[in-house]
Image (cartoon, rainbow, N blue to C red; front, side, top):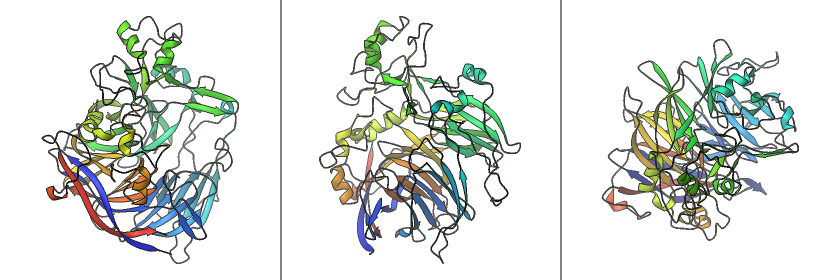
Length: 556
């Protein structure tokens, strides 16, 4: 049974002098399961995790933990689920190339064992089916010390059709391990080889698809592959970010938003990345989320991070650390709660002489030819959230008490972890501007920047957060006012690819279980539609509550 209803979708856009922002077109809440043919709905149930867009047929493919759904967005204000496919394994990623659809799945019983790459023809609306044409079995092992290298995989075998858009990549193995480690490539788990430690996260091609850029998040590196010669070209260490002159809130127990300067460092460790060019020069822009390694498989238990105060209690800091910094590291209202690395910055005795934590709490731009940094956002991402979304500053989007907690009740709880976690990043053009969209994971906001012609210094445009903040999580989900919690995946649709011939941003809310479409354009200043959702300095902030009427398919 299909229920069609009228839904008020709330969103909050904060704007400074710029005008480019997001306005809601539709938001579809996805079922995570089915019972007697009817969708079963709830949040934090992995209803959606990965999405892909079929430009030709205006279809969204979205994979959760139990189902792959296909959503028709040819009428973007009325998205409708037209197909569901039961999954027996967790999906790691999906993609569409021409007439083919592919997904990577874990082993159904144990993620450390063999996974699969499955290739299908795109959805057939006549037969209402996905026809699988090939399956490639991965190689893995329960023993972390015997795992084969994580690598881009070469498609091979005479039975595999020649697929358009799918590059043939070489097997990837690092031979000069010592050289790479000396250069700064991290190897978190020492007993394994460096090649086994490498963890590809996200990819981006240059404009003519002759080079592929891959983030190695846990390794704090980016590698490049030459697509013409099918060879690894370079592996670049991204180095560390210095915080001595930047402000940082590193404690969830300091009673609020308390940003201070500390002589410590962080590892950039980007997740998402994008490529662009200025005057023929290539650049890579990265969302520096951060990630520490935790292993618990095959009899191996390894955790590379620890609270700073715990390290202080264990006398794990070198005498080279100043008394003032040591005091802050033992104080839970300053640095004591911060999760820091136990394996980086060590002296000859194995004690920490330089403090490193995880994630750049922002985004950076690097020259693609040598990964020289030409821009970093510093502490601006956190400061903008403090200014415009202080009530959910460094908040989490999940709670053990959804019937009692509101989003504002979780303020500051992620300060001691990765703070403002810039997870995914995409670029596009609208209103004559080159735009950057950055999804902030736990706070569940999307930042919009513009990049002036010929420049590598982004200009802040706006921050958007879908949904409301003034009700409990349970009430927000029931009323479909939750927004895109944990926006894990984004895709920019330019006017020629968009279903309504105007630029749009597609956002996947992993925790909310939503797929949302947003119009990208000028933000309308309508003072009559303001609703107070935050406490800020109104002389500095133009506060707009965008309340839109959308008619859509809400249940299947």
